[in-house]
Length: 366
Image 1 (spheres, rainbow, N blue to C red):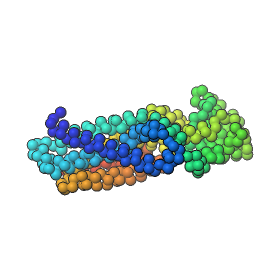
Image 2: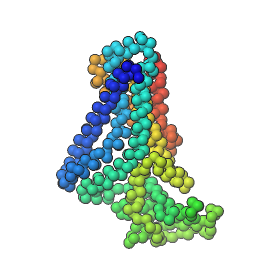
Image 3: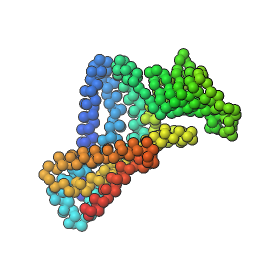
Image 4: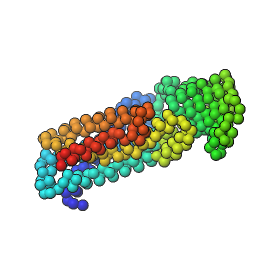
């Protein structure tokens, strides 16, 4: 590695680590203060609090790593530019790529690390964190939240090779609306399909209202006319607690598990649920590359900062760029989940715009 590369990467790495530490510390302080009354009421031990916030580290890392890369790149190159060191490098025959390639490689390494953490550590830490949080929360607050809770577009693999697709699920009243149930044989062929407007769990059994049952043979043909029932008791083994647990399961899945889950759901023709999960899956891939793209976008802005207040200028540009990215990404994700654009385009649109803009500005700067 050249002396110049070591000089640049040392500055970027130091600022990156400092930003991570500051963001982590601020997050913990703000979160502790917001839940301080509950912590004191429940007399939560220091050991439990430490475990809880240690589990937050992977999630905080993937969220703040791109912004830390952005701020570190802006500050480093803006400082070099202010001190006329960039001019000296260009005068010696170095191109923009020669000057910035070490930082670009650094961004690529951080992107790989973010992808691994997001796909493997975050689901596990989220699951354990949820268990600890439930033990910390006060009972009145927890009960009030449950009474208001409505889970939409719920899908679940039940026992005995049964698939459940629920439009709305109300955990407090143990009620479901817009129900589709598919029973499959060992070869994944649908042998029975049940549609119901409403289902209520009473005395350990499900009671369905306005239900229609279709029975199929192995060739996928109806055995007989559909059966309609104004009220019918079903003997499924799944309970409301099983559906409540499943509603959060995708957040706790690794990338490989989520891919398998989507593959199974896509065979059942539930387009809305499958489309939303595909957007989430693709976003795991594309969001990991944000650290790399944000560095490419930061370089041309950093090389134009010549003011004395380099730090303030870098922070201001970082906030504007981060906010712009968030708005574009939120819009593209919403469009993808609404079905207006393809899931893969929805998850990558903001990154494509950032990449095109960065190449344009770098070429213009060269």
